[in-house]
Length: 169
Length: 307
Image 1 (cartoon, one colour):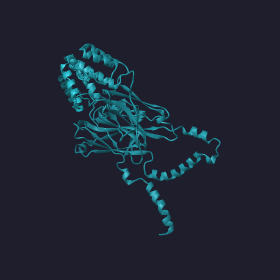
Image 2 (cartoon, helix red, strand yellow; image 1 turned 180 degrees about the vertical axis):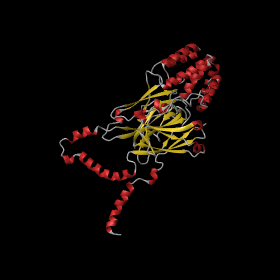
Image 3 (cartoon, helix red, strand yellow; image 1 turned 120 degrees about the vertical axis):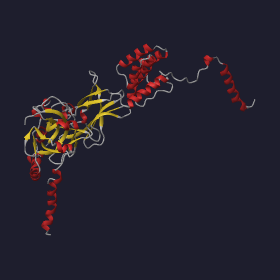
Image 4 (cartoon, one colour; image 1 turned 30 degrees about the vertical axis):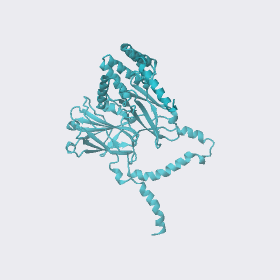
């Protein structure tokens, strides 16, 4: 090995340490949400929204009814799903078979890197207009582009309300 | 007379005098205190004790109610007031009031035991109330408090909370520490004079000074009973909540500092140069990872335990 090559090894080692970790691209943020069977029997879709100023919100209050009746549209950050769809609230159709078989359903949303968020997942029943079944609200202290601390999510329990949870993109 | 006989003879003399004394004089040297005469004192407590000893139970009840309504009553005095109220109510045959008073007493002092001299009826009621508390038939404390928003620093932080069914003797506190420190400081929630269930805690300004760089403070809320058992809370010492104290207005301050300094000695120049250098390296990383978004994978499951 030449002396020149030897000299470049430490630099190469430093630069390789700067790149993203492969394992970090999957499951960076462990948000595991459980829903009660009562919700699972009726749920058709899940709507995910992220609010600014999470620490100034009361999750207990936010979970009582539709999010759109409690916050302004500007309070919601623009999210993006893996297909590139953008919106202040993203809807995901529930795979009931997978859920009932205990496999669970994986969703992914891209959130702007930042601090002090509240992530709200609303369970929606099919209908015209759609119906609110319940929600799970979770404080997100920080969202990094790298590894994020795991969050213990609040369970989704049935809190049926006569409101339409739809949020325009 | 032998010298050894003297103590024996003196003892015999006391015995004879004791036996011949009239019944009125045969009082024990250290009389046991009356049931009502234990614990701390206040004018109402002293008067109520006398009234109970004289059998004036209705008057004693009124005195004790007045004592409970008095301002600046200490926890020890409250405990004694409730103890006497329970006793008085039982003598008056008002079991509901006795139960209410003893519940409050037990919430404040979970390890409180009645003296052995207490009447059997009182002991039986007390045992039933303790059993109720053990099986959680007494309402639990509820704490409703919002997380602290990021403060500007250099100013006190006022936190308001709603605490329902706070047991007598229980304390609600806000614990906080600068991220990285080991020990937590704490401030008590103090009852708002205006509203019964509203409480307020204040983190002093000197604990959250304004600094050139932002810094984080970890905190949690906790309500504990007199035996330091956690009754309610939000966050805990292992999983605290977090707020960030905003930095000083750096640009204005920096402009003042840099006056009269040669341009090449300005820290902002070197910060800029450093930023360019770091930016070059970070750019490589940002190309392969999303530069302004973080992915949040969410897994939804059905919880078989929840109906």
